Image: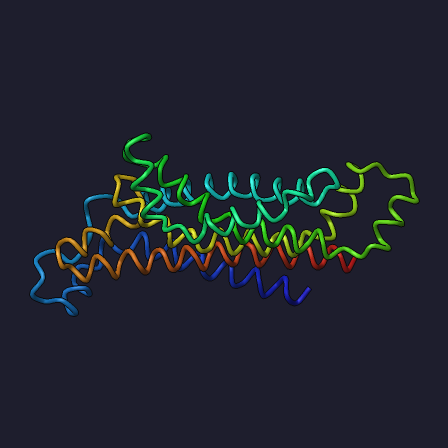
Length: 247
């Protein structure tokens, strides 16, 4: 219970701080000029930070849902008797997806899909698969054989064993994989701005192109706070699962 309360407080803290920063940034001109007095424009104003934050969250969330569906589905498939022969192949493909640079995925996707959000989501899905697949395999393969035999002895079908025994027991490890995947992709999504996707990478790219360090700092701070908020959400869910298991 104490861990749940701590997780709640951390989530509240980072969420409030993110909201305050996003709302306050356009009004911090004087403060930023103390750092860069010679810079002509020290506040990124081409787009609202609130709008960029919403787009960034939507892109990461869509990619996270797709990657979770594919990763968990593949992990389940190759731990069934009929799919075990494909386990090495699935593991290798997931590894290749993360080692292949997201920028290269974007470059290859743009000619076929055009600029914008879709190539960014594809790159994030490929980049986020590995931790989900690995943790799904670790969770399902780590279940005690005696537990599975007991479930069979109770007359549970294979589908019932999956939903009532395997997934609940593997949920903590599986959630850790999704948490890692989504948190990493919050930062990785910024590269989508290089091909026209509206993300929190916009001020970063504008800062690099114009040599404006203030833009870069603003984008980096918001991305970091968003990552902390999302990580806190997963921590809270994990604490809830742990408390449920103990109950």
